[in-house]
Amino acid sequence: MALSIFKSRGIKAAQQRAKADYIKVASLPESDRAARVVRLRMANRCKANLDKVFVEGAQKTALFQRQSVAALTKGSEKPVAPVANSYQRVKTVSGEIFTYLPEEFAEEVFRLGAMYQTQQIDIAKAITLGQEVAARVSSEIGLDEPFVALQFLRNELEASDTAEAEDNENNLMDEENEQDEN
Image (cartoon, rainbow, N blue to C red):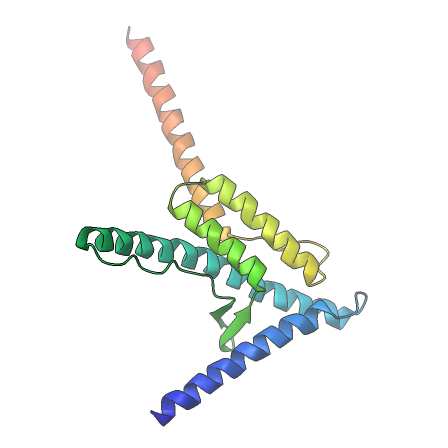
């Protein structure tokens, strides 16, 4: 029991440090070279947080939908809708850390993940809207250029486009072969 209290305190302290680091970076002077390095490190943390919040939004929405259907079937009370978490654990080269994204950004990205999961938006729209959030976060922490958000979705879209292009090319070749045979 006492061990879990200390662990909980340690998590809270790590989360408070993550938030304090974000706030500190957002207030650094613009022209300082050292500040640029710190901003880029924070951008990587924000990017990882944003990606994880998107995935969490999709996963928790899927679970919420399943639980809602089960509750409806059983005639029991509907579960509480999921909400975003501004703090995310991410792995770095020096170990696992907490990252922080202000609640307004976390909620927006969480909703994007939920909308993507429920097919209210497609992959291209999710990328576009996620990048808009990344641009606002980047501006808030003082970056000249926004970091790239939702790279995993971009990779998925690129792979899908490549597969589709290959299918189209194969279909054209099949049609040409059929015409040559006739």
